[in-house]
Image (cartoon, rainbow, N blue to C red; front, side):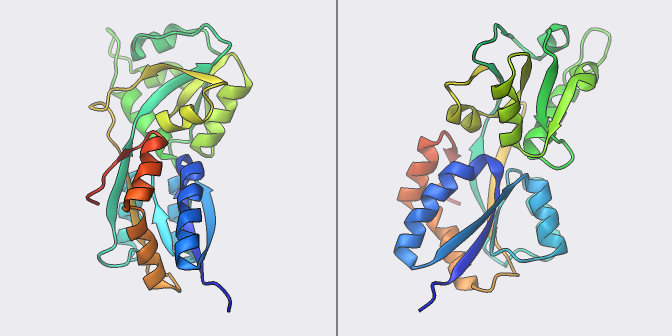
Length: 240
């Protein structure tokens, strides 16, 4: 008998932990999970233009809202899975330090690596944060460093840029920085009141295995899955 296959579209920042959770789900449900990891905007656009996914986990509310408005979210399945924090990172070998966002324009980094704000939630969170911080002349920090931006297709690509060069800094989620603690260091954590980072999950109307898709969404809220998410540094929302 062929095992049913579930296609899960997942924000890139969840790459490692979702595969670990997926192994537990596969073992208990006799199913095979296939993943598509990318920036949430790219995933949402794929879902809306050519729906082939069973489950979507987004790194921000906006892209899930867009998918839901398009009619692609299965009724009653959308839940808030977890929260994350945004951090500024530097290569472990660098001497960069910062006490706040107003330090950024005067720092001598070559590039500021960030997920493309048009498609990657980590990038849009960064842009929103830095556009909201202005100097004494009323200029936003974002406008002052924009010429040094190095847009990346997803948050893991932004992380890789900082890992590879000592003169690049950037923003990623705290959980991503934890996966490369031997290569990068956190030089600033953005206050949670400045940026609220939420990850919703939902089964999709395009699913060819709707009951299994709902089962996977529910599985993400089990103690075993929640423990793995917590260990990866996420702030879980066990109530859904």
